[in-house]
Image (cartoon, rainbow, N blue to C red; front, side):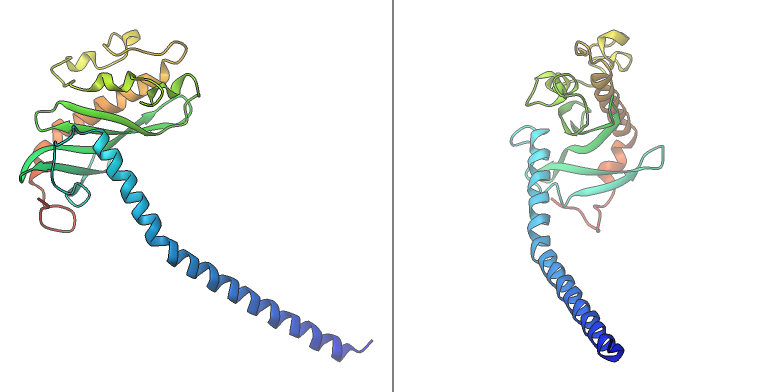
Amino acid sequence: MDIKALQEKLGYHGVFLGLVGLLASAALATADMATHEDIRLAERRDLEASLKQVLPQGFADNDLLKDTVTLARGDGKEVKVFRARLGGEAKGAVFEVSSRGYAGDVVALLGVDTAGVVQGVRVLKHQETPGLGDKIEVAKSKWILDFDGKSFGTPPVEKWGVKKDGGVFDQFAGATITPRAVVKAVREGMEFYRDHKDEIYSKPADGGGKEH
């Protein structure tokens, strides 16, 4: 066996494989750069669509994606709040709320006006059981629309629960945990809004200045 020839051959293969790896990495990096902007724009469109679902048509005329403030909750976690304005006047706010459901966290978007009245709630993501817990989706049931027009005066705070717990919101047959989680998330979101309302509208927008 010609050991020298074998070593040269193996060395050649090593260099060749290295070049292939470099070319593949370069191709992936180029593809990522090419699609990054498209992905960012798609995410922006999805978020804009979600924000519009929890606010009435014509409720605001500003760019909610630019007029944001980030605040800390009592547990130290941060909440990004999208502020709605009409003609420069504060009209309301939108932010995410969440609570543990049956199979995982249920994350929803809550829209509320300056008076503390719910304008809309939409579930963004969940892992609840199809056919039971997924009735929290507006496409599957109108249940989520029951939050519209509610506030901490209508009904009283202590009534913000499912009927099984003495509240005013319906539960689902065979799936009480899921609606209970959504009501809890919205109630806690309303408490956050009540406690931080002044700061929400007075704090400069993230990045400085205010977006009107």
